[in-house]
Image (tube, helix red, strand yellow):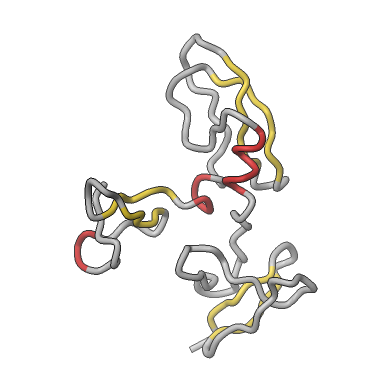
Amino acid sequence: MECSPTGSGANSCPSTHSCESSTTFGGVCCPRPQYVCKLPREQGNCGTYSNRWWFNAKTGNCEEFIYSGCQGNSNNFETYKECQDYCRDARSEPQCIQGTALTDSNGNFIICGGSTAASTTCPANHYCYYDGTTYGCCPTQG
């Protein structure tokens, strides 16, 4: 799907995708790692079997599976390293009590609190919330 790299107008991507610059088009909508890496493992239904890797969002690890050679989904990588490299920043979405957790311009969830070097302070109208798994900036009650 074509898009406008500025993100304006009718040519913007769905929230699960980002607009990547293209030399052929103005831009192309590509799935975000946060979307791809949450997809379930899908073997497909053809008969050319091979070992592939998928990111298990529940365990936070890349796991091997048998792929049938067609169909399935985008959470399907040829190597462990490819899976790790693509999904390493696909953190779980913080489960806010109300609304959706804040993301940066690349669609990554903003991490706050905790003891990580990446910790930041949430902007106005958001507060740092820990859902038992992940810290995130959640909207305050309006």
